[in-house]
Amino acid sequence: MKLQSKQAALVVGALMFAALSGLAAFAAWATGEIDWWRASADGGKTPLIMFAARFPHSWHTPAALERIAALVEREDADAWKHAESEDTADGFREYLAKFPGGTHSDKATLRLKSNR
Image 1: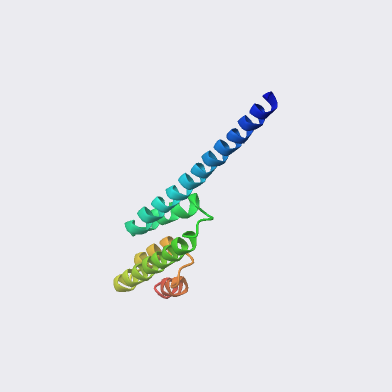
Image 2 (image 1 turned 90 degrees about the vertical axis):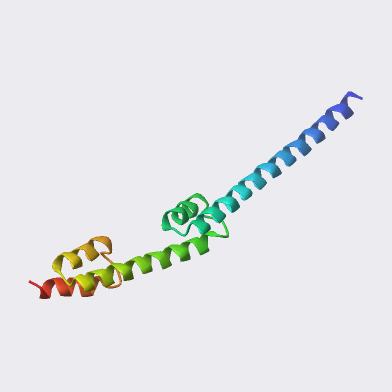
């Protein structure tokens, strides 16, 4: 009789462990979903970067990285537009400081050299 109650206790313990493990996995998944919703709703780059760093294996991470890349491209284009409209050495230096490997870095460097 004692053997059966020990086995029953082991089975109950195993079931409780499985249930708690499942709850922990669900909680981790739910946290990732909530963080994704918040990061994607924010519209800014920083929440998306923080999400991708915290949940690198989430199925939302590729979308976060794509949005980050699009935001950086837009920032690059806006900074270049500003530098071109100023058309000063300081404007081109500012662009290069923010985007040293940016889409227009070669143009900015050439404009700096031609203004000397």
